[in-house]
Image 1 (tube, rainbow, N blue to C red):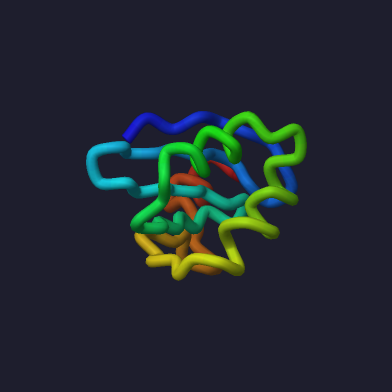
Image 2: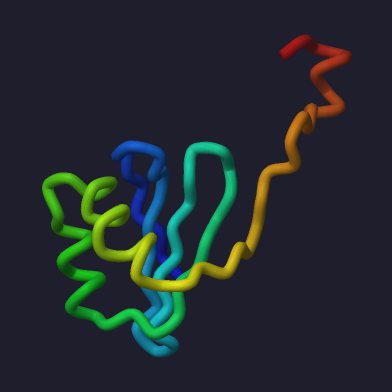
Length: 86
């Protein structure tokens, strides 16, 4: 799935897979959520919204059930930070 980088509220990337009608959103905390059964017209409206975070909150987050597909572990550290600093 091709992702589009965005900077809107807590959104950092959005993408859509038309074959499976799956919407994916990546959030600022590193988590990624997928929503199944999304229409292409809803995707187009979301992608082209002037306020994507508001559109997401109003039309997707509260209307569809998300499946968490990845998450950045809390408190995770890069092992190289100890050698080279963060």
